[in-house]
Image (cartoon, rainbow, N blue to C red; front, side, top):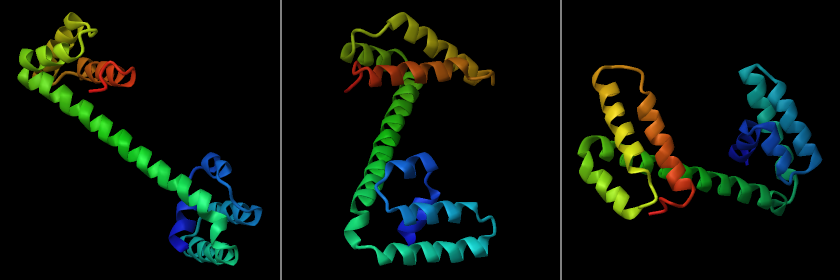
Length: 152
C-alpha cells in the first residue's frame, strides 16, 4: 500500500482529482505534498498508507486500474516514438531505398518535401548545425502516424 500511496502523491494534482478516492485520502495526499523535509514526508507517506489500509481494498480498485492504464498508454506512446525515430534513421542512412519503400506503403506522402527534409537533415548533422530539418522530419513522420496515413 505504501508504493501505491507514493504513486498517488507523485501524480499531478489534476490527475489525482480525476481518480475515485475517498476525501480523507485526497486531503492526506495534499498534506504530504506540502511537506518539504524528506524524513517528515516519508513519515507522512507512511501515515497516508495506514489511512488507505483502513479503507476496504475495493475502494482503490478503480484508481489502481486507471494508473495501470496510464502506464500501458505511456508504454504504447514510447514504442510509437521509437518506431518513428527508427524510420527517420533509416531514411537518413538508407536514403532513396527507404524513401521509395515508405512512399510505396503511403502514396499520399509528399515525396519532394520528404526528400528535401532528408537532404537538409543530413547536411545539418554533417556540418554540426542546429537540427531543424531533422526535427521537422520527425514531426512529419509523427503526423503521418497520427493521422493514420502511416498506421503500418
